[in-house]
Image (tube, rainbow, N blue to C red; front, side, top):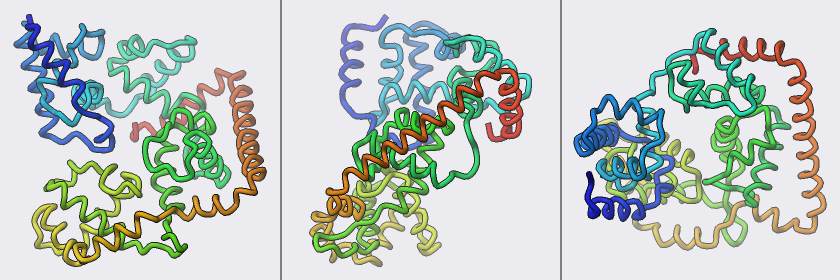
Amino acid sequence: PRSQKTEAETLKWRTKFDGAKVRNVKFNDAENENIMKAIRAYCAESGTTEEILCESLHKEKQERNTWSRIAFLAGLERRSVWSMVQRVRRILYSKVGSWSSEQLEVLLDEVTSSSRPSWKRIAASLGINPTAARDKWKDYCGGNKRKGTWTSVEDWVLRMAICEVEDDLLPVRNVRWSLVRKWLPHRSKDQCRFRWFTFLLPKLIAYEDKYGYPLEPEIFDRLLVRKLKKTGLDDAADVEWTHVNTWWSAEMNRRRWRWMAVRAPTELDGLQEQIEYFYKALDCKAKKKRDKKLLKKAVSVVERKAADSEGEQEEDDASIDEARHIVAKQIEVMRKEEDLPAKRRRETLAEAEDSGTEG
């Protein structure tokens, strides 16, 4: 049994850091290995076998501080306990493979036969992780999801939804997608997130200085390079892209660096050598004060236009009302479709089979 001192150390560790700082940073191989070592160490500490523990980690509710202790033993100070819980389940049950028509039939029958489906029970009947079963239903079956090209109306509703939910014209992080998705019942959270960060936001985001002149793109490139140089990291997979350049989203920062990295000389070895090359090529040191002064008074073009047209608030309210009206119509269509469950389930099954290799 663990001592009171060990319990105190674990509790203290849990309150040390904010896991949101690495929300967009993938787990690397070293972190995965540390987590699995922590599981083995916990087995030796608690007197159980690794096989029994791994079998119960994703099926049963654990005793108090079990996950906290495993996280403490892993020693990943930048990761939250819950992020490691999710990672363990994905490490152990990551290879679900393509879904067969029989599995999809079972999933559809189990979910539609209950008003509150138990994902643990459904996952047990399929032999997979409960999270994988839930995600499959939400992505391909639940809510009659639509796939393919976004229409201009959907883009407009998505933008209205984000503005209404976050009270921000251009949010670049921490958007509450579970609330945004309610405006687009035919699209999943992941679809909405991907559409915003990879298509809509890059088109909308542009900044001006205090006199209304557009800021040159090189300012943000230099800011990106300075921040990367300051981290001292030599692997792009470890970079916390959310905090490298707070004017852009994590995805925009990541994509911009990839674009720059492929244009660096091929003889450069490692991230820091590439950063040092761009640091000199873009003259980051000499222009640091100038860039800082410009960014201090910078404002997005969209926000400035909104401020200049504050007298048109009635038009904005009308736009939001129109978006809500479109959402109400979509929900009404969904309810009509639910009156034909057998037919719709077969259509949904056929759609899911077409995308089986992607699942």
